[in-house]
Length: 222
Image (cartoon, rainbow, N blue to C red; front, side):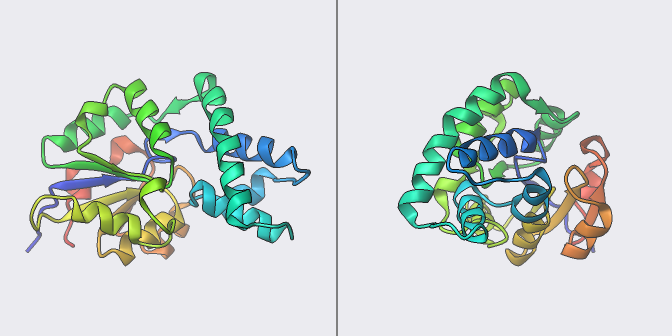
């Protein structure tokens, strides 16, 4: 028997807002100040899906540079204003994002589980006009490990009412792996990776756009 899913946990970057190019630009700009190159291809293939701390640490380590906590914190602090400056003119919201959030709130709680910083998420949700519809946010500041670690989704699932099941909506391989490891149904969109890659990562279903995410698709058999 199909058990309906009534709560929804959205990833943020790459699912609701098209800002991975902004993150890449901000990472590249900050790292260039230290003479560390970052190509768009490397970012997409190796670091997309990490939170800022995880991405900086991995990039520094891969480049043979020091990656202690103090350096990573300094880089994160440098990136914050760069991202906010760029997002003022470069932010793109995916078609159907606000409508999907509003529709899912009619069925149950809607939360955000993301590796982004809280102020970035809140800023974008306000621009989208849906900040009031979000029951809670689990951001980078709330976890000790980024996706593909399931910690964020486990925290998010724990904030949902009672034993109501949930579906996670993801765009990255790391996100799909994290959602599945947390025991969630996961539906992915091909905003960042191909259908084949997302299915191989373990997505229960894959769509090419947010308007294709019908309630029937999202509320499948767990």
